[in-house]
Length: 342
Ligand code: PMP
Image: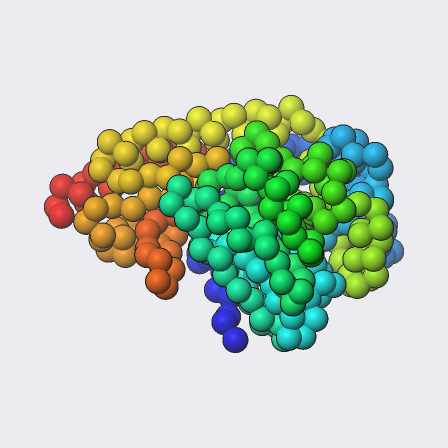
């Protein structure tokens, strides 16, 4: 079985963390106040097993008809687990694009299922065959924007892939708030399009562990049967409800991070990197020297952690998360000094 190795999580301190696509800014103060308020409440009682307050607020914020379109989970990773558990039986298959989020494969392995990867073509497009699912493929994952590339497929491309499929297509929208587009309207039209979301990235709440699924109500009610009984705790439900309700905070932080991402793209390109145009809160870049691992080591020795990624039969490179402007300036300085010595 392929183990999933999460990104390095150093003890809080001097390290500049640009390796796991978190939000570099502190969360919304309204969210912190909601946690404090909930902490003085009924912690001796179990939480609402289906996070009704959050689901109502999310339906309102995202223009969905009602809370029955949403399933809340302990991070979107838990939602992905529920999806694999629900749709893919032993010896059946999960399909995913390559390279993309490695955890999908591990979830299939844990389930006793198999997986097949379909490689992206040039320009991070997917071959039409991605949508052509034989009977044993029971679930398809598509991160949009994709990680590590930060690239997106258009809504038309997603819709036409799903139309070909004989199984559900899960569009993993962990980074969709940074791209300005999403598949929620497609979920309303097609029962085989499901969307997953997280509060770990744009909302700056990775430490909280809160994610959710958007799907047609009969899909949500079936999947709810296989979740753990109290999968979201009372403090997280209160925090997530406050977070999802504040669109102004979200819009401001996303605009700020996207501006930094565009600055990263320009400056790294000037330094000679090949930077994939990104619609997420990170950039994927390669350098003609091929010295990606050495660059990762050099940066790490200087307290900046980026993600070195190597994909067998495909290649390697650096995935660098958007940081604060000061953090990114420090990254530029270090990389420039390193490149001079190559
Ligand atoms: N999907 C993708 C594509 C991701 O990169 C991540 C973050 N590692 C997740 C899902 C999981 O996010 P979380 O469990 O923090 O909600």
